[in-house]
Amino acid sequence: MLVLSRKIGETISVGDGIEIVVNRISGNRVTLGIKAPGDVRIVRGELEIHDSAPVPSFEWAASESEMVAH
Image 1 (spheres, rainbow, N blue to C red):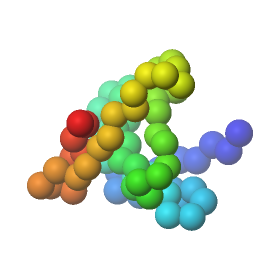
Image 2 (image 1 turned 90 degrees about the vertical axis):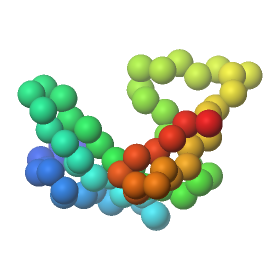
Image 3 (image 1 turned 45 degrees about the vertical axis):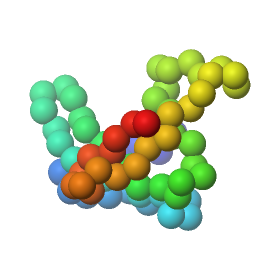
């Protein structure tokens, strides 16, 4: 496992076209933004996704700092 330290606004690049940015740090919570191609599936680790379950699609809201689930 690679462990990195990042400050707010700093990024991590993963593979082709995937970028993770630290948006906010508050106490023991970190808010991350993820920029990735539309065909890349991103799921939180604690969610159990079954093949038959629909995967929500996301699109950028008016502000690029927010994504909206559909």
